[in-house]
Image 1: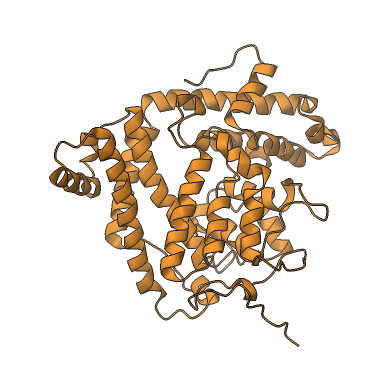
Image 2: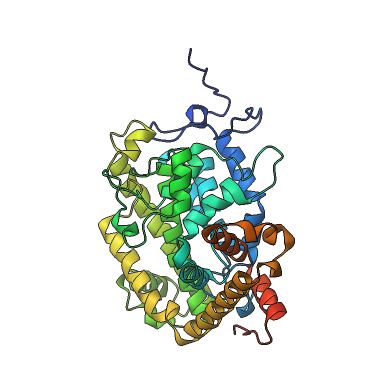
Amino acid sequence: MAEPIDRRFDRRRAPYACDPAAGRGRLLPEPSSPTRSDFQRDRDRIIHSTAFRRLKHKTQVFVHHEGDHFRTRLTHTIEVSQIARALARALGLDEDLAEALALSHDLGHTPFGHTGEDALDACMKPWGGFDHNAQALRIVTRLERRYADFDGLNLSWETLEGLVKHNGPLLDAEGRPTPRHAAQGVAGAILEFDAQWPLGLATHASAEAQAAAIADDIAYDAHDIDDGLRAGLFGLDDLRTVPFLADILAEIDAKWPGLERGRVIHELGRRVITRLIEDVIGEARLRLEGLESPDAVRAAGRAVIAFSPSAEEADRTIKTFLFANMYRHASVVAVRKQADRVLRDLFDAFAAEPGRMPQEWSAGIEALEPASRHRRIADYIAGMTDRFALQEHRRLFDATPDLR
């Protein structure tokens, strides 16, 4: 006989939304909570995790020395969460699942932003490479050790699926890596977990996961513009080369002639976010029409939470501008080279002498085969905050870059 469906946490929910009362449960069954749905519990477990707290001192583009007003991984994550909830609310999705996925999407990132990931990936090339999505899965299924009964956070299937597949399928219908993963293949940690509890790697994720993914894009567009302006990497007039931004700046100039620069920056960011959110809501409503279940979303063959063609072009041109004028700016590149050196030095030092790591990480490491030994070193380094990585480098080396 089928288990009765628990309706204590019902709310307005579209037919294509994930329903925690009809979810696929957890790898290790647990008693249900009398006060929270499974997705609410997932969200809360993520917020209380050690990896989530560390996001406070992990950077996006700038290292933490640059100033208190630039984004960290934590502030970025909070912004993504707000946008994901707004999208979920407008589209009748489960807000708690969308929020849980937004809060967890950066858990696997290394210190020093994408530079750190590139450095660890290079160091781990002989042993399977390094991928921040796979690392996030390792964190929530193995590395967090908070509970007496299990390692990891024992999150629901829907949250794990969204964490792994929020950017789209990893495999095609024949089981081959999709173009996004063709060069390196799907990360071993993901394939190993999928063999234990299949996540449907050849389909799209839920609409909630897609909402969290596009919320990440929207947040990046807005806050990297803001950070780049405040850092002096480019000016407001430079942004007028991007038609989408030029239109918004013209609106601001027309409504508030001579408005002070700081308020122009805030107004620009607010309008970028609002315009892109409203575009996604409109486009998603068209794509979701006729889809009557979460599995129909997964089998749709394309993303259903997406930009319209015009907004997709705007997103592309914003990212092109930021790549050239921010991520490849001489001052940022110089810091990235120093950060790359710090992580490579740490990896080499711990690989040569694993006993230099804390006892909880070095215990028994010599008995491991090489791939597992180096993966443990990567786990340790990936979990570091920016300032702890620098502290460890100073402990082990005579000279440490100041990353300024």
